[in-house]
Length: 286
Image 1 (cartoon, rainbow, N blue to C red):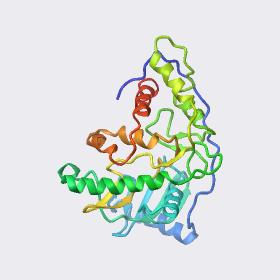
Image 2 (image 1 turned 180 degrees about the horizontal axis):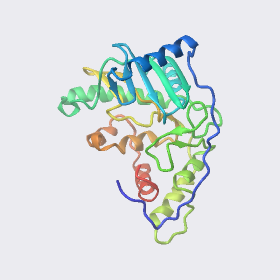
Image 3 (image 1 turned 90 degrees about the vertical axis):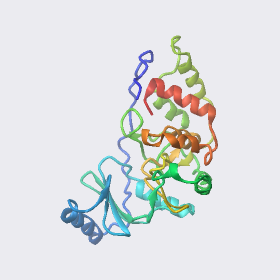
């Protein structure tokens, strides 16, 4: 990862930390007891994948401290408004700073496994399904006056951005852009590309678009040539229209090969990608 370009001054902007709606789902004393007791008794012996503990063939629990409070609500939102396969949420609640989601375990494998070994025909079938799902997700209409936020109107979560893990909410796309560039409004003769970024950021934009925010091969589940689940919705919410494309393109080191595929399921955003590269040059690695 590169270092910040020192020609641009740093501005510290206030962050909204007061938004705490009740985002629990199907929380009852019995369900809460089941989740907490299971973790207390079996946490050390349960198989796990990152923050997800496997309870059985059909059930798992996700436990995080840093994470999107609205992730479970987001999965329900997607299930309600689309035909995209997402894990069914049985129960979700927060307790003592930890967020718990008891949910369906998707039966399949992450797309990254043996992607490079797949035939061209297999890849084509899978990418066509991902495109249909991405198109369906992007057709969800934004509510009137929608800004940049999670689906509950609160902060977005993305630990890849500079400035912490929680961001916003923001009333407009322009407010979000100003936050991304840390308040910089141009004028530095030694950074003409950063000044161009300001001009591009300040133009008019369409309404925010519902976005997964991390459509990598590690968050797409397949069984054979069938996409059976899109997982890890913690970065999802209402983002600028181009964000799905640029975030999918800026993959982690384990997904470099995925860049060759992004244009096959998302509309290419060439200028937007160039501007995001400028932003990352001066204001953060992601």
